Length: 216
Image 1 (cartoon, rainbow, N blue to C red):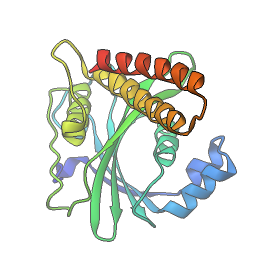
Image 2 (spheres, rainbow, N blue to C red):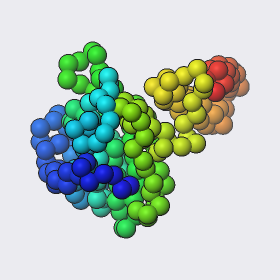
Image 3 (cartoon, rainbow, N blue to C red):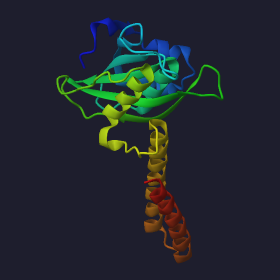
């Protein structure tokens, strides 16, 4: 991740900025405090810092480095940061000398002013900093952002030839929700003693599996 020196920002951000200025539950605030040690704004990728054009959707991309107190980070914490910053963010998570790149698909929420909607988050494995290879690819900020998602998601995001990346991510999101629903119904079937109720659950299960197959 050797981004151009012109993109370097290297500014520490107070954690309180996120849970004091936003509407946050006490549970989420506790997660934030417990799981994150420090936040650094490492890089800013924009037409003013690197030789690319402005995109239509993405103004600039920030690289935030989060030093963690534990390896597992609740994605609600990343969503809180994403919604509190009016730019697109690539997260670099650090724990015990290893690093993980993480990014969610972020779009403007047209139902609310100055608000963003978050879709699936994708992350790499935990790697050494030398193994973590991300490149700035694209002619504008929109394409650089989508290419970061492609690089980080890798094989976990299949994109059909007829789709753009947003459509692929929303389809992937629906697939994950359906898989969760299928798992819950299968568990109910295994525990259900009444035969008639098993039949109804199996019918529901078939519908969900058919819907899932249509998305694959």
